[in-house]
Image (cartoon, rainbow, N blue to C red; front, side):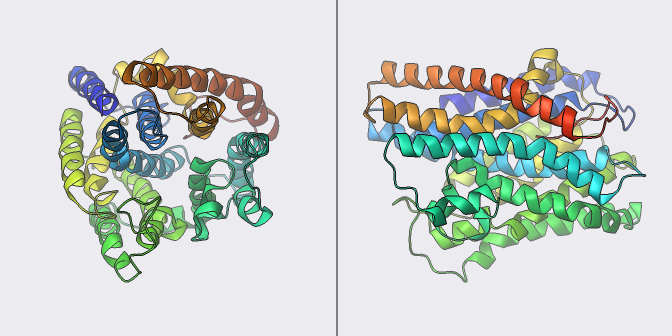
Length: 386
């Protein structure tokens, strides 16, 4: 929980400093503050998986860390999904074709995915975990989130389930973006409100599904969580909302909302999420704060957009795919035990450092060369998401 509080503090301080420096600039900007926020979101996911790994000797500490960050981690993933729609719209090319667009997205995502999927498979074999082909092959093809079976969703690298949602987003973007472009500027806010309402309604619809079984023995009904969190067509709402927010900003219709207001709204949403039952507290409370954060921070000049944070943000995709492999298999290699607070914190800090180092290696050796070789050259002013 202390990790989450620290992250919130950094956001409040950085965005408070930025309020007087914000300004509107051209649509070709690199969106540095949003790039920095990507790494902050990745830290939230890391913190939640650190809690689920249960490395503390105190079960209460493990439960508090996992429970307090569960909704933050899901808000972070929702932010990634919205950001995908926002940035793809922000940097859209009028002369682009679906084929060229899909090629660029494949060059961005697939090399890192293939490397981490293979690494996960080898690590599973190394520790003698069962590897049924029916459980691991769907994640190779990025269809695992469509299948409501926990081992299939986890695949060889648990967090990669979100790439199954991204795959649907990328396939649909060349067709979805023109539809959104037809919305008249004066109706964009109405469209965003409808999408927000749709996202908030999702957990209510999930009540039509059975409560049992529970997820990992926690008070989390699996079928309802799968429908609310994992199912790609449902998460398409987040992506579409990002597209609409980008259109609002580009149309000059975004109001003067101080970014710190978005952060404070997110803190309030976090408190509300802790009081709500699963799956109501996972995503719905954060929809409006995330929307405000995305729209108000897209053109900030702040510490979040400084060279260090931008570089960390550029590593966030690799970090996201690598972190669980490091956390889980390093813990297994050490015997899977539980430790006192100093040793447990030391383990998590070491895992974070190793994850960051491996993320940098993956980015330099795989991601960046693949994008240079497999993508058509593009303007350096256009910022790719995640």
